[in-house]
Image (cartoon, rainbow, N blue to C red; front, side):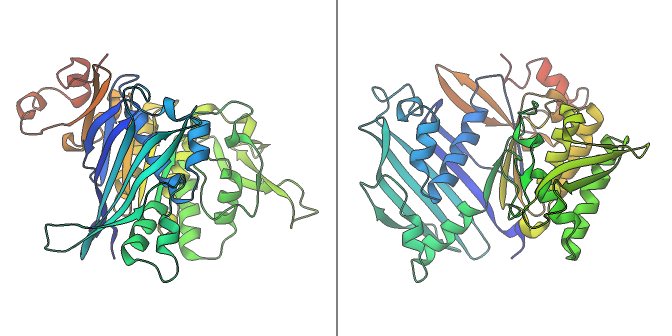
Length: 378
């Protein structure tokens, strides 16, 4: 089935951090813009949590996040439970996943209910199947199983095809700059920690789709960093090719070889972003989100990034969270969702092209944002 015929159509959240009660209907491309603390990253964190729930890693996520009290809207005294609901549509049917998570002893979360739902095409009613209550990790995987519930199988597929990328850390000790295990190439990690190995797997592959992806990524990198003659992800210990890790080397225009620690922060982020969005179609998530893709990027690189987002969106839904007004000018008004926070709660508001029609005859979206016509400013 083509990607255009399948999509996450609704994200509903209650009680997660600043997401007191929000609804978002993502399109093929959705650009969240708002001030620091408005709640953009909270939505991306929620999606990451749901993806980890599928792999029975909820307790790990809660622990790393500082405990359940740090996740519930203003803590457990005000918010006893959080609700999550994701709706997925394809040509023949719609499915949904729901979870109600309550505060439990030890500053943890407990499933008060976990559901999967199915609605045939043409029907207006979802059939709800409860997977149970009282468990501390999702039992979706168990419900799907080899001979499991077809709806649970469909929901499991969706959650397995959701990914979140964040390439903020480009310090010398950052995962992006480190060597990576050559066998760790099934998918690009959300923090880019296996970037070198993943790129090498594309470079040495004999599969046409992976060869094409390698050429595409290399060409995009040269467009934003013409001093890079070629990327050369290299075995650190070529004498032991079976066990050697991989380093992201590159060659400059004078044929001098350099390592990843000679790349600027912006150039390294570009390589990671282009890899995430330019990877082979069969490796792409069905839904991917990127937090602050504009960090460290030259304005010209932003235009290239936006074009890549547009082309990739024919195969995957893309959600961007940004603070960059300049990025708005590269997308359509209806693709922009203004994120604001009032009385401690986040709101999402999609721009209405008709309402802005007169304004857009004289001003760009970035100018309207700077003038606070769109909202979303501090």
